[in-house]
Length: 535
Ligand SMILES: *[C@@H]1O[C@H](CO)[C@@H](O)[C@H](O)[C@H]1NC(C)=O
Ligand SMILES: *[C@@H]1O[C@H](CO)[C@@H](O)[C@H](O)[C@H]1NC(C)=O
Ligand SMILES: *[C@@H]1O[C@H](CO)[C@@H](O)[C@H](O)[C@H]1NC(C)=O
Ligand SMILES: *[C@@H]1O[C@H](CO)[C@@H](O)[C@H](O)[C@H]1NC(C)=O
Ligand SMILES: *[C@@H]1O[C@H](CO)[C@@H](O)[C@H](O)[C@H]1NC(C)=O
Ligand SMILES: *[C@@H]1O[C@H](CO)[C@@H](O)[C@H](O)[C@H]1NC(C)=O
Ligand SMILES: *[C@@H]1O[C@H](CO)[C@@H](O)[C@H](O)[C@H]1NC(C)=O
Ligand SMILES: *[C@@H]1O[C@H](CO)[C@@H](O)[C@H](O)[C@H]1NC(C)=O
Ligand SMILES: *[C@@H]1O[C@H](CO)[C@@H](O)[C@H](O)[C@H]1NC(C)=O
Image (tube, protein in one colour):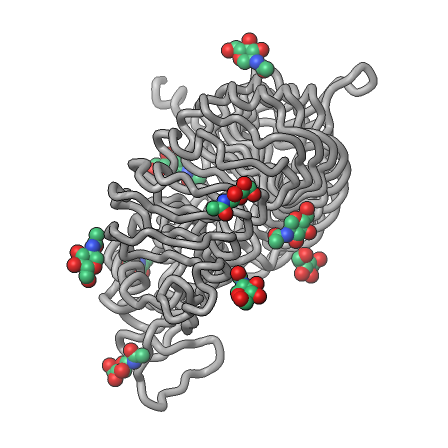
């Protein structure tokens, strides 16, 4: 009897499973038709729950994770039928094109949606606003156009919203009498990453409120105009505020001094006017860039010498005058002082308690007529274009270093490789490297020719990523228009000519999820892989 009941139970279960199975199986089948280059395991077995990148619960697909596997195709498959999905990650497959399927809006259980680093085009579907469980939405680094849908304001659980590096336009949607949804309602959001789009109009004052918990507001590289809303001062959780490279006008609101948790403030390359903001109370600031605005001419403000954790001060193309305050150079954490193209004059004195961290002082094109030597400072000091350098161009600080950027030395004689392969600097064998671009947001050095600096990066890469010594190739370091140091990276397999897919996932994850830590002077980074081949 018990056996009978068990058998009946199993039969019922398997019918149930069978129904779910055919739905998800059909949906995955349609994706296979729409995609090329899916992992080989997708052809080896009909048990899709064992396929690479697929996770199931009771035969329903709950996770589809195919980041950076070289997928080619679009989202025309019936992805909206995978209704049990909680996590969908197709990021860094530049072969994925076409528009975002409105069917994504059916995936009501979706918690994580990552479609970053592909080549999707067209609008962000309004239907994404139906994904009420979503906490993580990353559509950055695609070719999306049109506006930000107001419906995204309905994603009340969202903590990460990344729409950066697309061609999105229009203004930021906020709620109003006529439009009930807007970004101002995202009261759990910690990240608004909207940089490098074509967003325009004023930054709405009611976008920000005291209920918000934002830590990163990254609006840089858009076309925002008008004033910085004083409501920004209400979001006291803010740690990074980037409004640089827009067309903002007016004075910086005094409420900004309420942001006492702010580490990074970047207002550079706008058309801000009036007095320099008073940052005296902002005791967490580490990185400040106020370059290239139209502030009133003034002497260096007091906070230049008092901010306790300041590492980087940038105010280039400004109207600072008078003498450079000596105390600035003895702030305990100060690393970089970049004040070129101002009107500082008189005598430069770095003082006699220069911070041990200080590596760069750039005061080119000021009116400094004298320099007091007497301190010990062996790092970069750039004074070209000051009267003190007039006629004395032999002095080291008066010459702009002319150097060839570093590149890993590959000495393999005349060896040549087939197309797509490269010589491993370590073994001189041809191999398919894992390639990508490293972006360092605030490196503590300027000299791109110093082999020791780059050797330290090579060594940390191969040792932390568990590769053979010397199997790292770096080339073409340069400072891009964001002032980020950009370096081309190629990693070579320890054995054979290619990395297997588990190695690629391991390495890609270590780099994209910041598990890998570069030497300290390189500072924070991010990594974008190029497509790679999995054999
Ligand atoms: C995507 O945008 C980039 C940068 O603007 C552009 O170079 C590229 O041609 C665009 N690709 C497509 C498929 O539209
Ligand atoms: C500064 O923060 C306080 C709360 O700590 C708030 O009452 C005040 O309105 C804020 N000031 C401005 C100008 O935003
Ligand atoms: C200063 O900012 C303007 C835009 O406001 C930009 O066009 C110009 O290139 C910037 N100048 C420098 C030296 O960065
Ligand atoms: C420096 O500039 C200020 C303001 O432009 C001026 O008053 C002062 O005399 C100058 N000092 C020197 C030493 O040239
Ligand atoms: C600066 O260089 C001199 C001579 O090379 C050296 O003796 C001194 O220790 C260096 N000082 C620092 C702070 O590195
Ligand atoms: C350098 O000296 C020349 C002649 O004395 C003068 O014309 C020029 O303006 C000076 N340059 C600077 C940067 O002071
Ligand atoms: C590159 O390595 C070869 C052999 O180890 C060496 O002879 C050469 O000097 C190196 N070149 C540079 C620029 O370091
Ligand atoms: C992938 O390569 C690594 C290192 O060569 C090796 O340890 C691992 O067993 C390989 N995995 C598979 C699935 O082939
Ligand atoms: C990155 O790694 C941390 C643990 O180190 C983990 O909590 C987090 O979920 C990972 N992020 C992603 C996007 O996988």
